[in-house]
Each structure stands twice: as structure tokens, then as C-alpha cells.
Image (cartoon, rainbow, N blue to C red; front, side, top):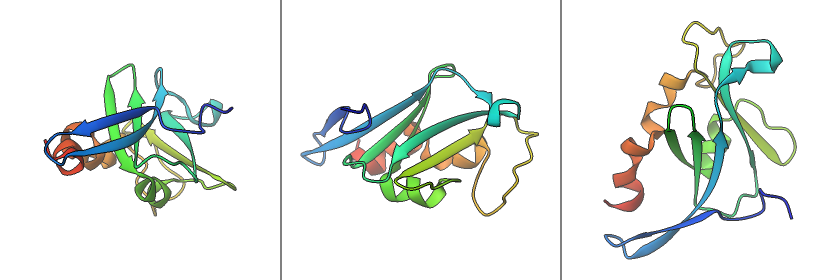
Length: 123
């Protein structure tokens, strides 16, 4: 069984009286994009992810971003068959090749856990 095949966490919201399912993807630290490019965090998410939420984590900064699967699919910079690849440049001087989607870490501020927790879980 692949580690991408299911749900990693279930978070209960007393305010909503609902349980929410979460898949967690983590990076130890930013790495060079494409092996030699600007430093970036990146995650691969299966398009058939069964969780309501996807938590993208940077362990080096303890940053967490919370997305719905629809948001992941909308903002992913690459979409090979069956997977979505979302990345965030941590280097503010990085020059993305495409400009139709956010690519820098600062452009994803609205998805940071601290900015989403109330809307997502009612707390």
C-alpha cells in the first residue's frame, strides 16, 4: 500500500460537531528546484486523495499550509496523470517560468494553517 493511499489524520471540530479528514505531506527543508534551481518546497498529491483537507508541511520552518483537494488541483504547477505537483519557492528572488499560478511561498499566505483554521474547523 502506498503512503498516499489514505487519510493520515482525523480532526474533530467541537464547534462544527464534525470530524475532518486530512492527508499530510511533509518536506524536511527546501531543496533546489529541478536539482539545481532556486530553493523550493514541493509536494506530490494524488488527484484521487480521499481526504477533505491536505496539509503541506515544511519541517525546517514549522510552516503548515492547509488546502482542499480542489485548491491543490487549481494551484498545482504541474499535473501529470493522476498527480498534482505543487511547489513554493522559498527564495524570493526566484524567477518562475510560468506566471499563471502562484509560485513563491509568500503567495500562499492565505493557505497557512493560522489563516485557515477558523474557516476550516470553526475554532
